[in-house]
Length: 195
Image (cartoon, rainbow, N blue to C red; front, side, top):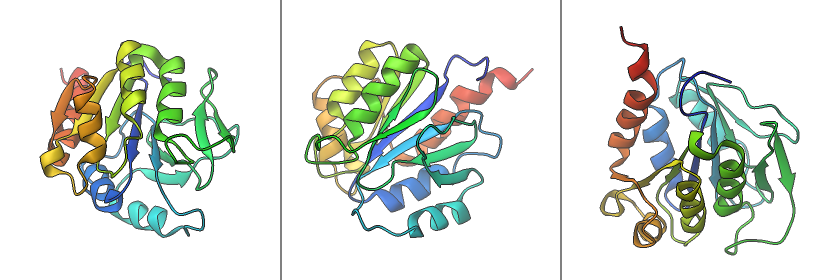
């Protein structure tokens, strides 16, 4: 997909997510070379407002992930409400209506574990604001596979439970404020392009 060390970014977010994602994605420049895959806990009847809002606020293409869709750089994919989202080894998506995990479908853990199996050390996992423990296990799996894990500083999160669960599990490489996460991603991905 690219010659960078990192191949994809996965993000888990729940309560307080719209503001957090708007802040993060507005920091990412056009030409961001990695696909970004998001699980946000949404109501099953959620309409498309979130995608319309984010498409207005950031330079990357924001869309709902489709079954068997091939991942593209510079795109932000969301798990559809009511479906687990998994990444296959051929870097396509699959959707599942298996049982809820951590009381959620889509589950952050399900995405994170499947993405870690696909990209191993080429994966960046980010856990943002939320009121559940979903994602902490997945962050540990990403770290075990050699990927990079980042949690929003719980002190800056609207709902600190989710990032704090990952921090408490000892599976976080970086604890950063929201604006710091965007700056860190830009530096991490684009530093090789400077002469």
